[in-house]
Length: 570
Image 1 (cartoon, rainbow, N blue to C red):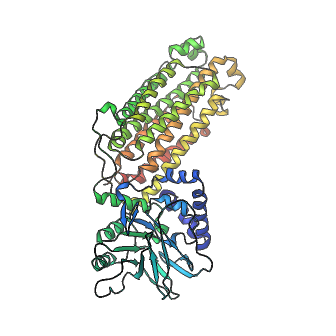
Image 2 (image 1 turned 90 degrees about the vertical axis):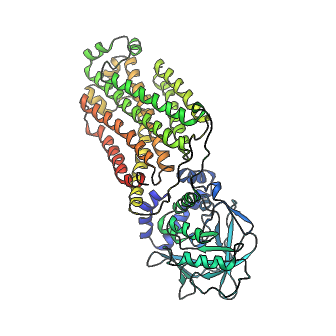
Image 3 (image 1 turned 30 degrees about the horizontal axis):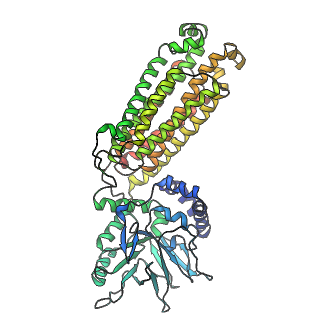
């Protein structure tokens, strides 16, 4: 559940349910995903949450992928261990025999309930680094590190013992003890926690281990505690109330603390860099869109179309003005989509791939390959467009160069410290709208592609043409083949546009990524202007036909408005 879905849809629904039912649903879904390779791949695809190698830390003789871990209260019964390991965490804390139930408190806190009898939960296989919490036999608790070293768990605001601590370190537990002996852990970091970490760091010395359990609500808290001297942070209530993306945002903030994001500046000619070929692909696609738009507003048919049909565009306009207008509307809509997708490629290339933004190169390559695959739809309608084939071959070479080209080209961009505020909360809704919009483009493209290869015309098309299917086919199979070619090509471009929008929105949506806002804005503007403008120009205004375009326009524009303050503000 990425934040854009959890904070907008899932959390309000889950929090209406009883605690145990909500936990069972959330962890059950994640557990089912984590149990299969495909499910784990889906988690990685949706979030790209793995911590970068620069975040690795060595604590107590063990290397942790990140100083951010998850406390045992997130999943006390180990239902979703494999899934949680994909969240970019450095470790998972588990509770041994005698673990407690965990419920949401009255406020924004997690409360430990009575002890649950039975054998201790054992994490399912799958690797990862685990810390184990257990009773110490004297009413307290201890945490065992992978190295076997045992650290006492103490209340964060408890007294620091006089003299030098003989222990190897300490676990500071945020919150307070409840009446039944269990901890009550609030979401927000307690005032003075960072200062208490500094005191304990001085007490245990530089070689000792200081772990903070709970108390991290946003990335700024993680940075403050690490700066104060904490080695590891175990998030629990913060994840439940603020969303699964909290770990990723904390990791990004710690990268920002180190100076810059992942990436290596490439020292080679521009023509050997991936961004150059992605930019060339975008410019070429946009140029083709300009030519297609001019064609749709003029003669509509190209010379090789006329040769295939056996008559000229003028004959088509004179004998069947409705069919001529129908073909113009298809080709004009296609032109707008090509212009928008070309703009998206160019912006992602210049501001994303060139600056080594994770996922930008994959997004353009995947979108382009989706578009090229749709070229083979001609097998369904029998019209091999030679110009289309030539352009596809040329553009495919640019895509191959993109895929094998060197990453980056300039130094990586800085990672912003992504704390939760009003603009962040609005942007979660904006990201949700964009994801729905992109998925809608993919589905619409697939449907139109299938229609182009099969029935070609839907009922609204025939009503506009004032014909039935038999009358259209009486004009000749070649006429139907040309129309089918246009429909399938439009479907393929919509499919490619959906993929090209979805992946950057999923992977690159972070504070200050103004290039993503401009890329999505430029994708939709020419596409919707051409689509709605061409329909109005030819008079094809059947509401059932154009309502999907208005729904898409609302989703796209709503996402722009809601994400603007977050993406365009450093």
